[in-house]
Image (cartoon, rainbow, N blue to C red; front, side, top):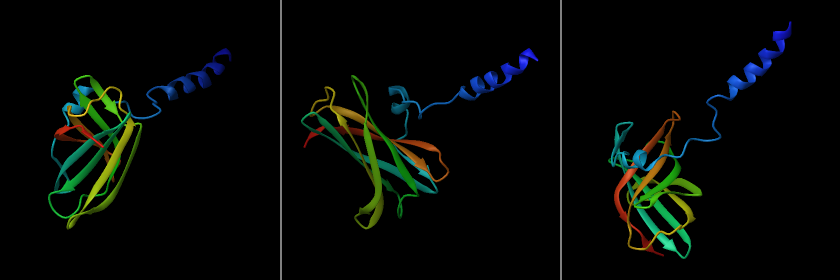
Length: 149
């Protein structure tokens, strides 16, 4: 009978294993390994990023476009920037589908403090996406330069 009290304690400890408050932050290596083109639902996707500084605020606009028609249903889940000093991640992220010329594209943005980033600096921008099945996908802009807003 003494061991009965161990069961609820063991169950509580085991249920806590592997639980995170959110997805882990990717490393610079993870982000640099992201592809610059991605095949999703028979469409080739590419991202174009426009990072800008406005005082102490860093803003990154991203545009995900498909090779034909519009991109499949995707959600922007994160915006990351790899610099020579490390990885910057947006403190706030948003995204929605918008007209992009004759087609529809997925546009998003990430915003946060600049933390030492400089205008004219070359960076790698990676957007985190979630597809309709809940999978996390990464897509990288080959090269972007920080502009001034």
